[in-house]
Image 1: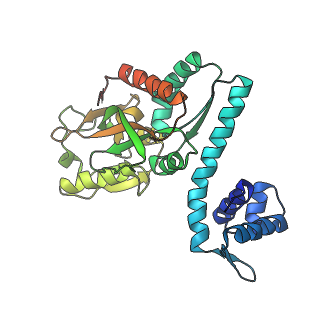
Image 2 (image 1 turned 45 degrees about the vertical axis):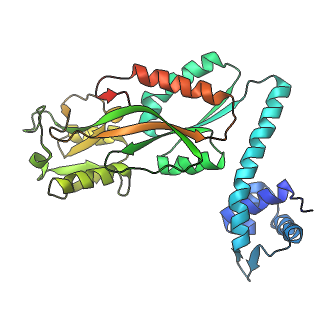
Image 3 (image 1 turned 180 degrees about the horizontal axis):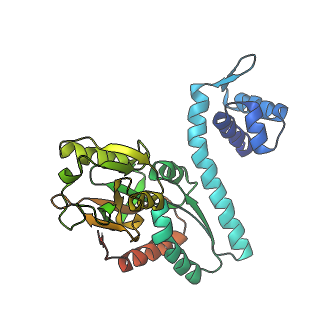
Amino acid sequence: MLVLNPVHLRTLVEVVKAGSFAGAARRLGYTSSAVSQQISAFERAVGVTLFEREAHSIRPTGAALLIADRGGELLAALDGFEHEVKAMVQGVRGRLRLGTFPTASSRVVPKALAKLSAERPDAEIRLDEAEPDDVLPLVLTGELDLALVYAYDLVPRTWPQELTVLPLLDEFLLVMVQAGHPAARNDVRLEDLAAERWIASRDGTSGATCLTRLCAAAGFAPKIAFRSNDYEVVQSLVAAGVGVALVPALGYRALPGTHAMPLRHRPLRRHVHVVHRTANANPLLRDAVNALREVCRNAVGGHITAP
């Protein structure tokens, strides 16, 4: 009967992540020799070679990659179980790990966490901020309990079948120009901005892809002069008159010297969802989702709508 040692499994996962015994040793607080011994013991237990050893490097085998991938999920589940047992013994109400993206961090999450903390004062709540492509894998592996994510109209997403996906709100994409710009009216057409310099998010992001596809449909390629994922920076650049931008309503702040409006003929939206593993049994999930939904219902208005 095969019995896996969780310590050896965690070591294997860290070696695969770090790419070396020495790197894993630094992350785990072990010596390189101890890591090597644990991997050797793991190889004897499973009966396969997990790493090809070379003079100055190692290479994980297919078996190691498979075990590390599934093992990460098992370790996350074990950590969660250990925390639940500890919380039960100590009388603590539980732990929730939430991922979110920057604009939701400032407009939605604080009020939701305040409500959740008031209702569950003994709960431990952790917050991580990153883009959807970065937080979704963490939800799948169990490192996060739930996450706020978004999808643009022109950049649809497919969701892994292991996830429950719940809509929270829809936000219009707003064209932002300097006050006094000829396009500063409520019926702006994208074609009117074909000659403008654009300020966009980083290349490869959903926002930048959406802008490129939108302009392509209007018959031109946007001349992107500046890039930033910080919408305060984007809007400050617009206010300075160095370009125009397409910003989601959650990222929009009415700055002096600027004007923002939806597109005239083709209003687009960014859709905000909360996702969690369907199999996640964390009792705080329901309370967290309810708090987020209530805050989002109250946020409707100002180019933000209910899904």
